Length: 486
Image 1 (cartoon, rainbow, N blue to C red):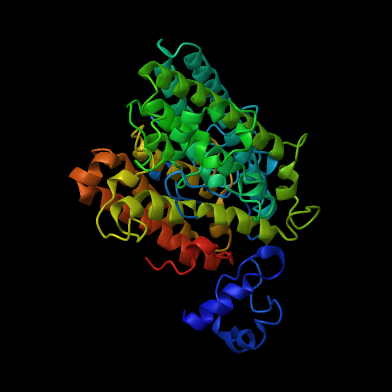
Image 2: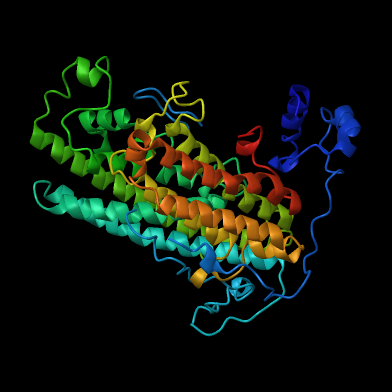
């Protein structure tokens, strides 16, 4: 796309409702050039696929094939805004009637919530949205339970920082983080930014990657502002799961700020004894974990029918929803969330530390210090959970990845070959992550080719996602993927 067309394209993204134009089709070129700066247009979009194309239960790729295993601120600057096989793989309860049984893999029939065989039904967009909604609720409830355990473990550690509670607190963080990494793929609705449909920014209150700021955490240790009543409204890069990782897994007496920062220049940090530092870190971790639990509870409440009921806003899209005027708008929001694997996983978690994107100090060399989880050293597992979360939405969130997913929609519109190729690419990415040895933190230094192989495998999936997938289903390319030609 030329520079001139890119400008037109960006201006068209400002049309009513905030949705984005997937591409400028040739037939629309003259029309767009004439009116793009004057009024929004949607006259060149192809009609969405039919609601029901063929009955459920059509042949699909077996889940067993692939069921294996903004910009960072300166030091102290502001931001605006696990070691398991996965959190209870496939155990997403409450998927709802719309999620039941359609297109489940043959090796493990999908079931309803009471364990009975799930009824079959024709594929509809409404049923897919119901399945996605059930998956989100299950994952968020799962994380809320893990966040509660983390809050309890960190409080016990704070009550006796010299005792044995540190190990339990770290283990609780690993479990909660694995759970959250799987839910990261569900960044739509209340978890999304406030500018997005139904967004409440709750994801960024829980986890700020890639905007973590250890220096800001150390400044908060020094002034003990974590104990202030205003802590929950402080900058999110000093709260959340990233801050807790640093507090629990970094045990040295140093800090992450440069010598010019006040805590070093004024001797504030040097004046802390080892016992004082340990006490403050433990207290701070407990305060941050309590805040994470509050955010997790708010996220669940925002989805629940008895709370904010975003569930109804999503599942009633195009009918009685005050958020989504059309069901295709809701599916676009969910599709945008799938691009987490393209932007955050491929570009930031892999490309950035590999030196493949220009954010690494504008250097082509690897930046191993920029891995996602440098203190707990579980960056590889984060990738594993992210890909499992992608599979939840793409293939199905029920047992054995049964239930409706975007692959079923592809098959309903006679794009089964694309569904199979995407599942194959996903399986390849999962294998690359599962076989990565040594862990990513070490591979970036000792076996760079192994780390690059993971990036290549993930790219095979994301190339299909941002080209054929959005085109076939008439979905819109999210802003994070526009202009990304790698």
